[in-house]
Image (cartoon, rainbow, N blue to C red):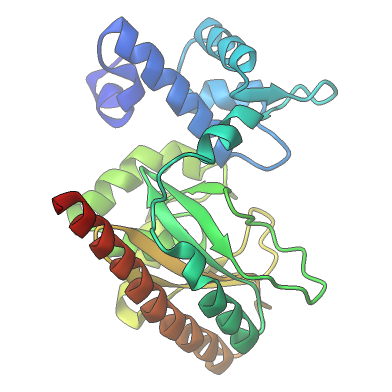
Length: 273
């Protein structure tokens, strides 16, 4: 294994014991990143850059522990129920998020589409809250769905918030994963970030099948990287309508940031006392 690959794939570094944990965690993230229909063994093996036998052993162990499920018919892998059970007691990435629901729902009505809040989780973007959208809506992107940073409007918005050096490092680490999302190229991601920085919001194809576009704005809250993103809207919408939606999301993002920052401040004060 070359040093270049090891530098961009943290799960390939470390002692054998640490390596096993890192590899298992990496495989779990891959499964969470790949389509909701499940991840094929060949995709997991290719993207992880691990030997076939190693991937087989990891998947078998993860299945035995309940971290991974395998569909009997398709043979594809999905995240298992134990992840959900552990998640029930996990610390929230963004405190006070329940208090943001009214903000998100109001933004959804004003924008005329589903609205979600996404946060950075390592090199991924995680959907942590979404509006109760009901107008015959079948939007993918339920709470818990993960995507590589740089994929979709929300991922681009969060990527744009990072320092330039960190952005480039993320893009390099995710380059192979990008190819699984409509053959997304790294230069395309870089151009999308530049556009986002210049206009203040991201517009990107929604989902692998490109069913319309998503619009997203960064939520400037520290130390958590958040974005507020719309569900798919017609690719034929006039620019004025896209800007109107972005304006609604920007207002919602400011309110979400205020609530989350308040929650972070309370947690800090409790630790100090």
